[in-house]
Each structure stands twice: as structure tokens, then as C-alpha cells.
Image (spheres, rainbow, N blue to C red):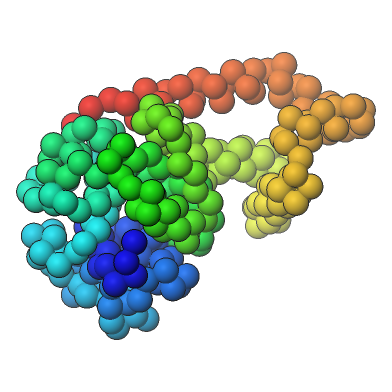
Length: 264
């Protein structure tokens, strides 16, 4: 794709749209004068990049953008009137399938993607899926776009986007639930809330980093501790006996059902 193309982000001043916008600027994938976002003048998150163009409406953005990212809530999307024929459209919305995006925008070159909240610190996992008419050059650009805010993968079926919306799209929410349970337990045993939070968050961070650096799968790590026969073994086995995995499966299934329901 030509480096002079202009990237537009509808919702580019929201938490997810701005995370993507600032990541691509920080990585220098595009220059500030190649980015246009919808943003009010009172709340502009691009103060460090004065070359970024901020417009107040999607109508104004679509007049100048060659590639358009839609980063709004699904219920807000139904209120937009977009005419994006012959342009690449990239959606960051849950629940809106490629066919509906194509019909609403007039473009047959559509990408659905699902970053998570960690995009704000460059640590998102972003799966994405493209319609058949998206060219290889455009796919390469999309991969670079989302790699600017973490790790990204192209998936081969739109149904996988719906599932990963529930799984990785949860961002820190599911790890936060585990962390909160551990912190509450520590506090109930007399550990100060501050120390409990530090110990739990550092343990989760260090454990994740260790598995990444050792290229060890979580199942390998669990087996290692179960085979060791120590105090952690007792904790793991008791959690599993009390339905830890079943609770997680039920939660992800519920999130998946929500991800495939129609927007209100």
C-alpha cells in the first residue's frame, strides 16, 4: 500500500480508537499528517502530535480518509451514514458481521478486528478477518497496523472473531477476576491490601512472562507444579476439584453468546 494514504479513525478519540491511533503514530507506521480522527476540540488525545487532523463528524472524515477504521459501539454504528465505496474499511466493533459492514458502508473490502484494552500500552492481542476482496498488500498493512499495538493474527473464519471477542477481547477482565479473588483471600488472612495487590499482580505478570520466555504452555507449567508435589500442587488440585475449569468454560461460553447476539 502507498505510504501516502490517509488513515481515518471514526471514534479515534475514544479509548480503543485512540489507543490504535497513538500506537501507529508511536511506531511511525504513519506520519501525523496521514491520520485524521473524529474528536472534539475540548478532549483531544493527540496533543503530542499536532499534525493529526481532528474533525467533528464521520461525514467530514470520510471525505478525506483513504482507509477508514470504525471504532464506535455497535448501537452507535447504526446511526452513522457512511459512503465508503472503493475504500478499505476496518471495524473494531463486536457483533457487526462483515456482510452488515459491507452493506452499511458500500465497500466490499472489509476487515473485522478485535483488539483489547491492553492496546493502550502496546500489549493487545488482536485477531482479524478480511473479506475475500481485500488484497494481499492491504492484508500486510492491516497486520502491521495491529502489530503496532501488540500481537496480531489473521484468522480464516469470521466465526473465530466472534469467539475471540469473548476470549482475548476480554483483555484484562478475566485475569483481573483471578487477581481479585487472590487479593481478597490474602486480605482475609491478614495481608494488607497494598501488599496483597503487589504480590498478586507481580505473580501474575512474572508467571506470564516466564511462560513466554521459556516457550512453555500453561498446561506444561501446571503439569510441572503438579508433578513437584509441593504446596502449589495442593492448591492446584483443590481448585480443579472445585470446578475451576468448568467455571471458566461457562464464563467464556456466556461471553461468546453475547458476542454473537444482535446489537440493541
